[in-house]
Length: 396
Image 1 (cartoon, rainbow, N blue to C red):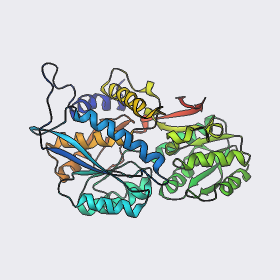
Image 2: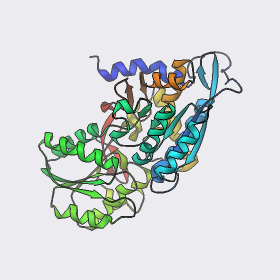
Image 3: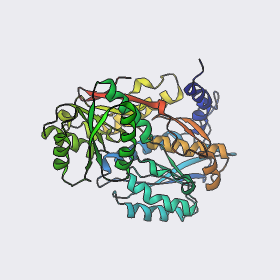
Image 4: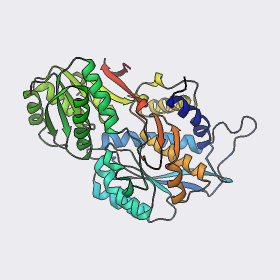
């Protein structure tokens, strides 16, 4: 049977190889990058502040992935360009992220931009990227990042859509036999997407939403929000928040007396969530997440599988345990490099054109971008996971 995923996989088999220069030469010396020619990508990341739990891991993955690409370079026309990353710490401050995007975008030698693991920092970059006609690939969660499309022509996102995640969460909750749940969603754009998506998904699944409680931003009174959630006396709690807020919410819920089911959206899946101070609170919790959370789901014989194993090996060697967080930044880098190869150019307009017509088998999952869809993560890439013994284990 021919499936959509099968078609995507077949279409991307050579794309992943050629984007990084892999597999083109079977014999003889490997090609080398052309001196003096670069693909320059600016990155504004949360290396400090509340978003560091996600931003630091993405910086580490970028370093490893860039080295792998630059071993042979990116074939752009008759040149092989090396990738040069210019990474800035936005300190989890949207205003600083916007200033950094402006600084990078006003330079003629910067061809694209990635970053923003928080929805607020990514949103602050969008206006700048649109005005300067600079392709921007966001690493943040939040559906508003890529819509309305008329105002997001140069904006792309590698994280899954809230609707796809909510649908799987609602189906999981129903399958577990739960009839009423509470939604504990963080304040901000990511939480707003979760509230809209979960409200509709639970209604469709026939599961009651007992109450929606907003989780304050880092530094707020998490305990009070948890007490309000527990007071609803529901069968389970859905925590829609990014790390480290996810772990803090889980601890507060257990302290307030919640002993039932706990569900997370993909924003919770970071190394911090499974650290010792959260271990007891998150044990047995469920999450919806792309396939990269379980290495066994990536075919060992595929180019993606080999690249993923290399990434995991390098990460463990340099930074210790690898918890299986989705390497969104590596996929963003791959998307931009592939667009440059297909366009035979590093021109911003041409990069944008080829970003929106791209099918790519990434490390986090499968992507299918079109001119009317700039959020390309395929829903088939998502799976159900549970924390068992302090590790994420795939159920289906």
